[in-house]
Length: 185
Image 1 (cartoon, rainbow, N blue to C red):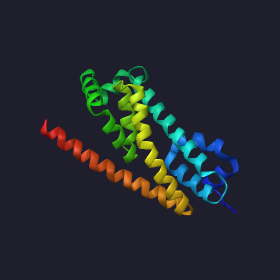
Image 2 (cartoon, one colour):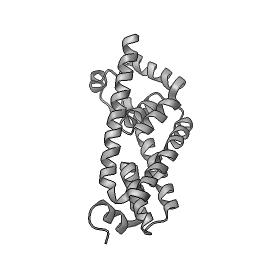
Image 3 (cartoon, rainbow, N blue to C red):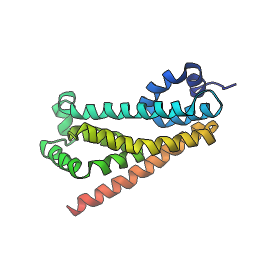
Image 4 (spheres, rainbow, N blue to C red):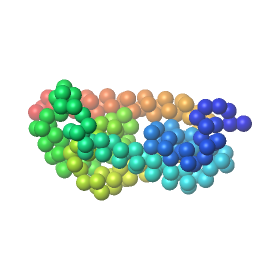
């Protein structure tokens, strides 16, 4: 018996449910779905395809939010966050020069990913390049998560906690690096 909670919910509703869940919370869902595939409830190849597509759709949603940031975010909030015209221009230059590297870093840190995806949209990074770099980052990330789920899926809640703490650590390192770079300017 599968038990209650997320694994039972995914097993009961199949891969059609996996897609929207992967859009919202890809890492945990990928681990759980791979574990269910290991138990013979899903085809692991389909789990990988659905997890990758869900992740890319989620990334695209954040990218689109970034492209419409000026219309969606009130002027007052943008000003409060320091999103001035000059900073957006700097962001555009950054994504022209280092957009791919930045997206791959965001993909691998998980926590830093959301603001980086929004920033890529705000910087009007070409969508084909955005999607290509995100696919490049999603493939190994999804494979590792699926392998974790296949081998250790019954511990999915602890794996999710580990992903969270690793993401927090990566965000702290990123923040320290950015502060260091800003102090040099």
